[in-house]
Length: 166
Image 1 (cartoon, rainbow, N blue to C red):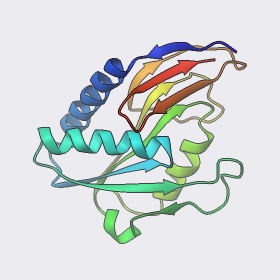
Image 2 (cartoon, one colour):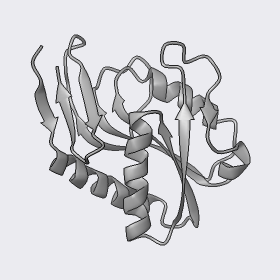
Image 3 (cartoon, rainbow, N blue to C red):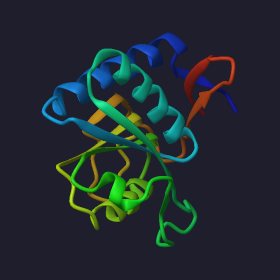
Image 4 (cartoon, rainbow, N blue to C red):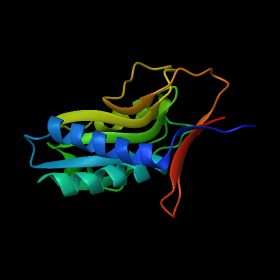
């Protein structure tokens, strides 16, 4: 199976910075926001966005890990922060790849139980193969791929990040 690199390390770094600025523009009137990343790669992506946001803005940024069973998304969603921590705050739900929208929509459903001032979504790669009516408010790249193709994002411990299509 061949790998076609769709985002290099440098492109991912630029995308993270651009998305962080877009988030700051959108949430500039907030004092504190929560960036909730879907485990595992979505959380890593959320952490990278959070780091840039803390450098470019005065927003207080809280990071939250969202655990969802991707094989059975109807099971309860778990978060590293309590609901009280994100009540009446702005929240950005982050994942690495938006495939069918299943993971994102079930995670969105979890956060709808709590009043939020604003609620947005961010993804690195939007595949345009949605099964559910969910969209990414902030996205790195949109791809129209066949349903047989697979997009994978690698966040390497050595800082070498890339996304590829196989």
